[in-house]
Figure 1 (tube, one colour):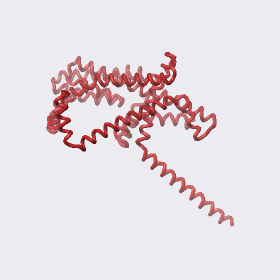
Figure 2 (tube, one colour):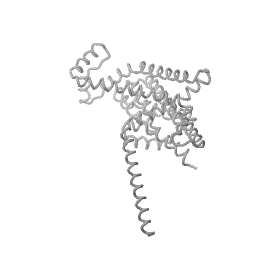
Figure 3 (cartoon, one colour):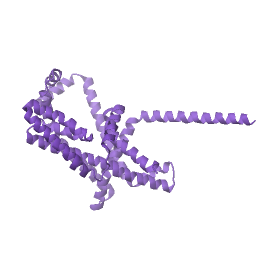
Figure 4 (cartoon, helix red, strand yellow):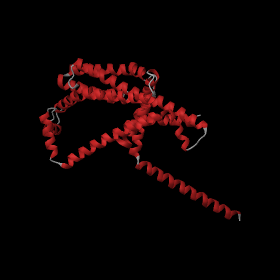
Length: 335
């Protein structure tokens, strides 16, 4: 009688385990199906933790209502982005086109010549006429542009509502529990993630802008052609600690050597070494002093893993995701 009861108990446990595994598989499949939405929500969260301290300072020092301080924060961000795009984009396109024409690769030269790009109205009209010959191409461009605008708008809206809900965001765990100690832990976790992840985002943006501006001015003074695209490349590669400046130096030295010879290439090399030393010993310690400092080796490995799993988007989100995982572990699992 006892053995029969034991067998029935074992069958019941086995069934519950099967149901649990089946439910987990369905959950994983569901999350994978909505991965684009999850990425968008995560981007909105990153934007929220980066902008919230700015909104708090406007609220504190200018005595503005929180809603108004959030609106002013968005106006400030959009204004800065618009100015950067308006000032940088036209000369960037011109120099980038000239750089592509200067690269001596037959297939690339054939494409650039066929493109015949210019910012003049007549050339833009010619390009539009050529593109207009294919209705599918036009529809693809329109749809992709609309999708990009809609995604950007959705990102801003999500982060806006997250900012509004930020003071009570930790209370959303009431969906799962109503114990006070968990509310306190959730609030502490959000404060930590805002300090580390938001600080890293703000610090990384400052580093990119400083390195890009410093490199651009230096290349102009040295006399390297195509200084703007090379400086922007150096700014973007700043996300790769230590090896980013090294990678950015390679095309600059190569262009200096091709256009002006070994003397300018040597000067460019010395300038790039100077920039890297200033970055490692002055700029990065000063900017990241109060922000989340990610170990360079871990940063590179995280970016490589993100690139392998999800392409460029995965590479861009690798370090923020690592910071979130590190904070979750430190807040809830480490004793």
